[in-house]
Image (cartoon, rainbow, N blue to C red; front, side, top):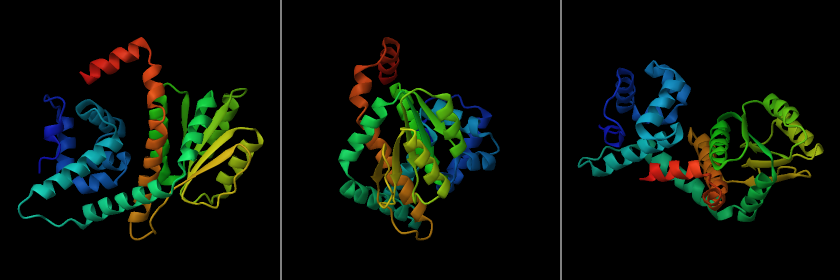
Length: 270
């Protein structure tokens, strides 16, 4: 199944490039369920090598690359005369559509606008995600950085505390992704941030979060934790919310590009 060849940007592949392609072609479904580190170990390369391969050959990041593989799998299944049943893809797609639909229907869009206002007022922004929510944290951080905002991605609560001390005397905003929002240390640091008049945006499936001064909540829907789909539904909703927030900055981005950035973007589009 030639999932990757037709999307290649360049044709002069290295041995390492071919090694990665061969692995993905043989294990496409498994690839989309694993972290970049886990896949890199199985392929026999470093995470940075895998990331560079994706960027160089497909002009994508790891997340977008995974979605591209899923789309190719679905397309191939639909075009195959003797269609092979794929419960994995069917369930993944069905549940992804379900949670995005439910989140879209029930989300308070005024909170998305308010989150943008929190971020705009900040001189420095920190994103943090608990567990698998790190994916959304990294994605939002990357997107806001591209827009031109000063963003730091924290991987631990200690990172947040260190960042606050480093960025002292600035207007700060912290974005916290947490499906359950029930960990004592996370709640404790939010209390400290609020006490120090630091804005906090909480993105969670828990709609009973105790909101303090300078904090706000964006609540999303998730399906029950059945088999392995519970975690996927949470990540899907979080990424959907990231997209909503970043989309509000698109006009800002286009109107405030530097000359150099404008030339780069225009050349890339051509």
